[in-house]
Structure formats: structure tokens, C-alpha cells
Length: 172
Image 1 (cartoon, one colour):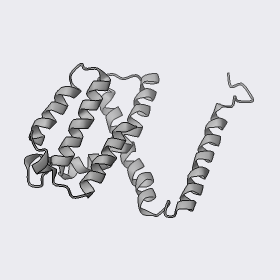
Image 2: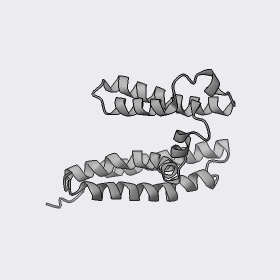
Image 3: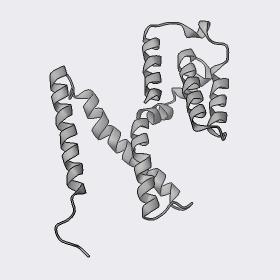
Image 4: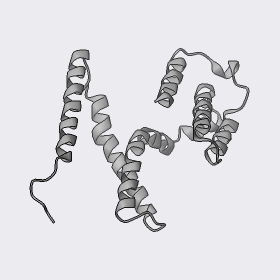
């Protein structure tokens, strides 16, 4: 999606070692963080709020300086760890909450268990799926990577197709 594209652009710009803190630092990053929180908890149009949060987060990433209060907060071990597992959190939260809604429901007493389950599965997914793919050179060469990706996509499609077939014998 375009949000990930914005993150890629910020990464590419930051790799060029351009000093944005002198060029565009009109508003302190801590104030921008508060603006992000205000947008997130306001009742704005989702398109406008998403654009605002992505733009402001990009601003923070480009203007953040080592040694500042916000830099110290964002580089704490726990915050960095949440950042590392954030993609897994993103992938797993909706599935777990959906299954919970269909089965046991979402109540005040189930929320702590659901949060723990989301975090636990996200950590497992990060350590045993994401990390091995990143570090083992699974996609090391171009043609091999395309072939392996095609095999994974085909296997996934066949698996999902197999799930969609009706059972031969009725269980009820």
C-alpha cells in the first residue's frame, strides 16, 4: 500500500545522509508525536487521518536527532522490540480478534488473554518465520528467488483451494 511506499521513500532519503534537521525542522518531533496522537483519537475521516499520521510519522523519522528526548524513548529496548514484531502484530491481530468474536466473544475479561495470545503468536512468527527468511539467504539469487516465490504462491493457492472443497461425507 502507499503507506509502505512512504516508509520506503523515507528510508531511501535517510540513506542519502541528507541533514533534514536543519532544512525542515520547523516543529519539534515531540510536538508532531502529540499531533499524531490527537489525530488517532479524533473522529476524522479515515482517509484524512491516515494521510496525516503517515505524513507526520515520516516527518518524525526524517528529523529525529540522536540525543533528543524522543530519540531516547524510541530507541528503548522494548520500543525497538515492538517495532521488530510490528509486522507480525499487524498480521495476527485481526485473525485472532475475528476468531475470538466468532467463538468466545470479546469482553472485558477476554481482552487480556487475546492481547497475550496476539503478542505470543507474533513473537513466535517473528522468530521462526520472519527471521529465518531474512537471515538464511532464502531469497539470495534473482532466478531462484522467483522460482521459490512461485512455488510458495502455488502451494498456498492449492492449499486454499483444497480447503474450499466440500467434504465427501456429511459430518452432521
